[in-house]
Image 1 (cartoon, each protein chain N blue to C red):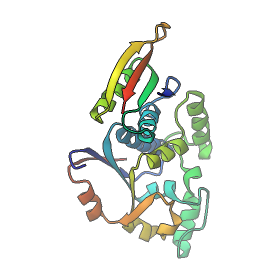
Image 2 (cartoon, chains in turn yellow, orange; image 1 turned 90 degrees about the vertical axis):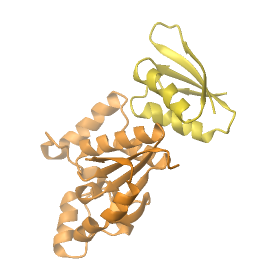
Image 3 (cartoon, one colour; image 1 turned 180 degrees about the vertical axis):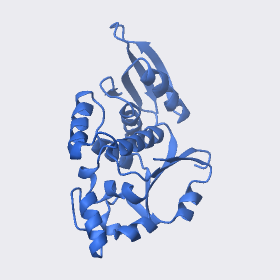
Image 4 (cartoon, chains in turn yellow, orange; image 1 turned 90 degrees about the horizontal axis):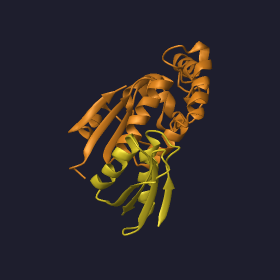
Length: 74
Length: 159
């Protein structure tokens, strides 16, 4: 399982970091991403699915600060 | 790849803030599965010079003076409130403070994302800039016909 925290990144590096990390991985591998609600949460999972990757889960980290954890399968 | 959504960005302006806008759209689009082409012409070429500061590129007195005065990536002015070049540095500081990617980081990302870089033959000819004067990311020096062919079915954005 690969890991990426993009909560301190801003647009467009949120998408860029995820895209470049996925590009480095081989098919079948999974990537855990911690991201903020709003634009990243709305669009990172969507753009991953558009690229043919599977979003296995999306869940609130539960810290009350809007951070979410998603798992993407390449 | 032909079913890809495509975006072509004409980078005409050599202003720091407009170049940031161009690279933000370009990297964001490439990261969200779009095929992106950036076409650099006129002042936009300054961002791609290997020499990032003031340098005497060119083949005659006028082009050499032009290139020296315009400079490279380190000399891109802000489109408003430039204050003789102080503002881009202040702006870069504010961007860093707010975790916004710098122009260098965006340019690096653009390269890693496989964005296509074309430079305009005609404006390079006028300014006396050769392909060797530009960074290696520039794949080809092309004319408007090639740009339009490559941008068939693409959204074209002019900055």
